[in-house]
Image (cartoon, one colour):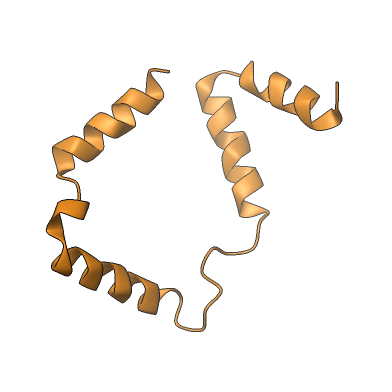
Length: 74
């Protein structure tokens, strides 16, 4: 088994709180998602305009909550 697979298997055996803490540490070790000079503002404006043009692309809060809930119960 590769080191990555071993680490992943061990991590998945951790309780939820410890997995979340580990995930946070790993994500914090990566470079920022938005490395643009505007901090991602142009991307946010583009997505906002896209939703204005096609509101059906968006989710209601209830739909969003349901998607999150369904992911957590896997």
